[in-house]
Image (tube, rainbow, N blue to C red; front, side):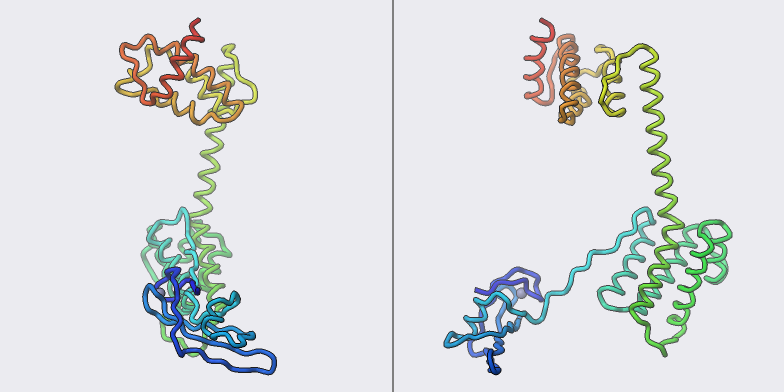
Length: 313
Ligand SMILES: [Zn+2]
């Protein structure tokens, strides 16, 4: 029984041996055995090759039962696409394509040309549209979009790309050349898009932290009791719930207590048990005032009804 990923259709398919296709090359100690197999899914042919001692066995059956068999051709290697987060989609897709040229087809000239285009498109995206690429790169530097060494790197990509674009195919481009050009392209994208995006994320995270801390400090100053050991986020959420008056809550038929349910379900930790308890007591106290209490989740409603009995007792 020979099953493998078919090189042609990509299915893990059963391969049927083709009668009479076996070849045995008897060496001094062992034999090299080959045989053809047909994919049951797409009918494509594969060749199995192994060395060993098939003895009197049918060589195809021996191959089909053997573990260390080399299959030819091999299925194409699947290389995950290189992604460029925070880079505009059109430019990111061209940059990924430059990598695909290099990795999939070893198409090094194409990779270099793509890298050059990516740098030009980056300048255009930043509103730099005049002059040849040499001046666009310098303008990106003058506008402090790229650092001096990254500018120099971008010029190297330009030189390489110019050779390709103007028919300079005399010298072969090595994979190492292409890798270097791609790394220089990456540096441009990092300076123009990715580093600023990272800084913006860090800044937003810091501002959220500061805001939370200020909220908690204000609550503590008002004499509100803070729960020790809770994360600032959970603490602030709890305070918010404690501060909301029951009457101010939306009527359940329009908007079930989604925030409460969400918090109930997300508080899975031991610390969360405390919040769950507070919330249940809180929601239970709120529920009887509603004209038609109907929660979206019957299970939640049942739990709350039970809790209400204990909480209001
Ligand atoms: Zn197949």
